[in-house]
Amino acid sequence: MPTQPSDFYLSPDTTTQHMIDTPFGELRVWVRELTWIQRQNALTQFVSFKANGDGDPTPSIDFGGYWSYMLTNCIERTEPSLTKEQLLNVRPEVGDELAKILPSFDSLVSSLSASGPLG
Image (cartoon, rainbow, N blue to C red):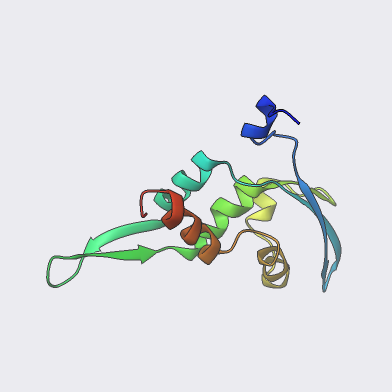
């Protein structure tokens, strides 16, 4: 089968549907994969470098920034419908369940180190 142009990019409507159980009921979530550019940009959103006592740069990771980035860039929609602002203010129990279906910090960093500026 010949290669098609669509084989080279992620279509905006390509999502994976997940049903998560929370203590407050079921939440259906459509998650889309991050594009290559979004993965490259992600690190700038939640990692900064500061000089340590020796003047060497050490990373400072903002995990709130990480999850904020994932919630706003990976979740296409939910049922019941939650706005981006509501997603950023979910209860801890709901956030714990969402974290299971969103890209993990480790998977993002390993993908960047394999193909991005860290590799």
